[in-house]
Image (cartoon, rainbow, N blue to C red; front, side, top):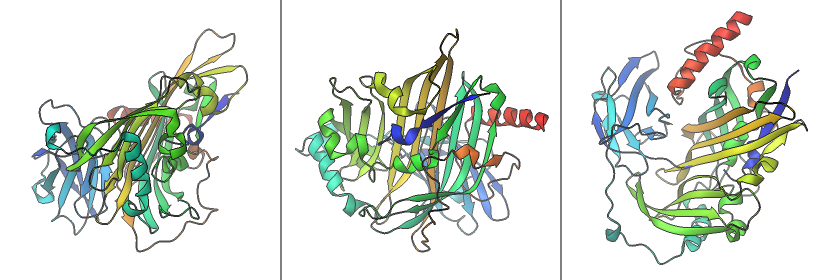
Length: 426
């Protein structure tokens, strides 16, 4: 009988990323028509190095319809009928924005090239505030910079588990989200599965089965502007060292970069990385950080929710990415990603097992007019396991006109292999 490890990423993150892009187009992209939408496919690369630009935002300009590029720099964006005359914007940290007419996109495997944004530091006026004061000022302006009204969001969620560098579980869903206002403590975000599927090779997973507890709920908790927790919460700042580390460009906007790490005498798993704050509005534009090496030895005790007593778990890495995007009237959560690497070993057994766990969620559409709070009984709970809630992969056209994150090539190969194994067992 398999033993089960339950990982509570939510408790791992009383905390938990950041997004953008820009550049030059090389008529990149393949275009496929269907009944209700046009499907745009492409790859985003650096204009000088030709390296893929990962986690870039791709958005139909002046709409709320968006997606992100994957770890190969590739993306799929579905254009609703009636919007083919518009443009697509490509945004990423440190790059110039690129805007391309949808009508200019033609067939074939082409590329969107992004140019690095030039920003001589001596041309930018850096305020006299310290890094800590800048963070506190940004927290005080949350009510001014983020939505004070509830809205409905559509998002695409994916979680994967690798064992010894091979995928053993891939699960994903289109999610409905009730996004509560940022300025209230009397209302909370709610999320439910609209449509989901999974592919998993349970027999492959040794004698240990790893499950993520509360994955979709965790993706909402990673909205650190709403849930400051262990990273930017005012009461936690005394446990960190902060440093203003210059200015970069995000979405053609000057953005402060604040570097941080936990203090060496703190015996608890905290974090290190970068916080990005918009210069003009002092809104949080994103965070990119991971478990600090200082606190890593204490991580297993906090992050592992449940395990057999004779099994040793070592957390080797945790990394988190949060990105926000400025809309016409406010800043909005755009993308979150969480990665966790761990090692397990049974007592009196010779070999160890390595696992890599990832979850990501991209907000692909927003609606602030037709807002209906998701009933509590339909909302996913923090103690529920997402893979237990969805069915197996079947139809290649499963997602229809919903925008998703294009799977990395390794995930696409894994899904095909896992599905073949499942069919052989049926």
